Image 1 (cartoon, rainbow, N blue to C red):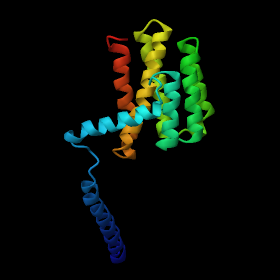
Image 2 (image 1 turned 90 degrees about the vertical axis):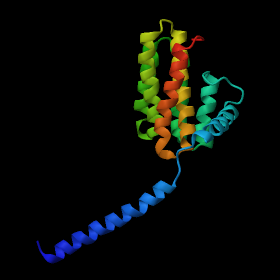
Image 3 (image 1 turned 90 degrees about the horizontal axis):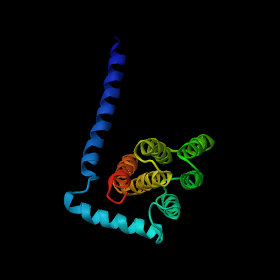
Image 4 (image 1 turned 180 degrees about the vertical axis):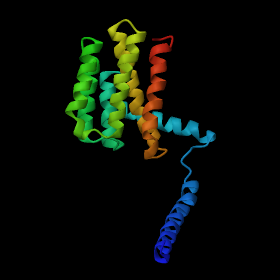
Length: 193
C-alpha cells in the first residue's frame, strides 16, 4: 500500500477516534438516569402533569385518551397533528367497535391509511393496541372487558412515552412499552378487573 494511502487511513482513524473520545465524557457527564432518591419526586411531577392533561376525565375512558392525545401533540410535541388525528380515530375504534375483530380491522386500516404520517411513537402505540387486542382475546370473554384492557394499554403507552421523555428522546419508545405493560397488568390481573 502506498504511503499516502496509509497516512490518509491513519488520519481518518485518528479523526474518528478523537470524535468518539470527545463524546464519551459528554455522555458520562449527562446524567439521564434519575437516582433512586429522585424517582418519587419525578413520579409525582408526571402524575401531576398527566392529571392536568386529563382535565378530570378518567384515564382509560374515551375522553381521557383523547385528552392524552392532545397532551402528546400540543404539550409534549411527541406526535404530529396527523398522528393525533390517527390516534383519535384509534380511540374511536377501541370504544365503538362491535367486537374485537372489527376493532382490529379498523386499527389495521388506520395504520395503512396514515402510513406516510406515522413516526416511531405513534407506530409503537398502534402496535401496543394491536397486541393488546390479541392478548386480551385470550384472557377475557366479554367485549367490554377487552375494551377496558386495550384502553388501559393505550393510556399506559401514552403516559409512558410522556414520562420517558424526561430521560431523553431515546427512551420514549421504551416508555411506551413499559407504560403499556404496567397498565396491562392492572387491567388484566388486578382484583378490580
